[in-house]
Figure 1 (cartoon, chains in turn cyan, brown):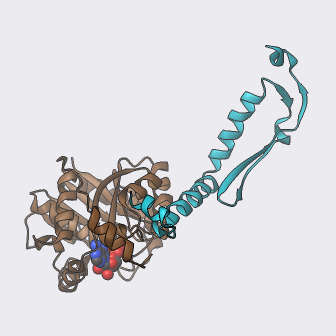
Figure 2: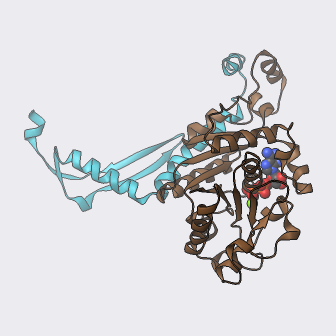
Figure 3: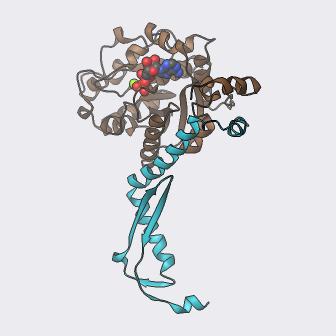
Length: 90
Length: 264
Ligand SMILES: Nc1ncnc2c1ncn2[C@@H]1O[C@H](COP(=O)(O)OP(=O)(O)O)[C@@H](O)[C@H]1O
Ligand SMILES: [Mg+2]
């Protein structure tokens, strides 16, 4: 309510909203940094799914999180050696 | 069998000691038997905030070093039945204590007292590990600002790793005016970020400072908003279901005030 009136009149965004957005981003990063198991778990689960379609060697896989402006991007490199075309055709 | 609850935060100065003193006193006023344990070895404060500093003879370190029995080290608060304090040693530092030693003390206290509240030092290092070693549950205290909340999130992760449950959040130094004009996050914002259960919101209250000056916990001053907030939290800790009142200022008036305030 408050917010919409202010937006209508072109006021600056509330600093509490800025605080919240910044916190959400930084805490996402903190949680990933701190929890080594998180990336390992994600790696395993992604590999499991991708293995249905591609063949790749586990130690060529690279995963990390990078910040771009207001959001984080998960970058996962799974260099594959071949398709399992059976699963592609289904 | 009682409960051992660690009061912690990550960041310093957010109100852990104030909350421990007031919640402990409030629980005793509700008829519970309570012991307050200062785990801030080397930087003890709970005794002075409680107004019991002149009566401390022994500390938890004396108990650990077997200089004295646990019961004899407890200072009785004469203002209310069933409230005790176990002071921290001022001449030692956090590494002089092992988490297992603190756990042993908590395990004993749990058999006699309904509530053992452990006042944790700031930080995520040894002092925090000592304080949480014997805890069944946790109260995480935060203020509604970015640094305190970020640190609270870190502490919550560490508490979850050692399976301390439940972890309840206290939002301290909440200012309805600042929330009203958009310069402070409200409870919904904080909960959205931290994602744990809220057990209470304590407003910014100058009574905290005057009561600390006197060494008389704020909860003895019935009328003050801070005292009422702490009494409600204590009731919730005893299992009573008491809704968390909305301390925020809403409505047309605050929107108008808001419109004119430049404070953002
Ligand atoms: N609700 C409150 N309103 C006003 N001042 C407060 C409030 N809570 C804490 N304070 C003040 O903040 C300071 C830090 O509190 P303290 O309980 O010692 O924090 P911590 O133990 O987390 O370091 C003290 O000066 C205390 O009086
Ligand atoms: Mg303290």
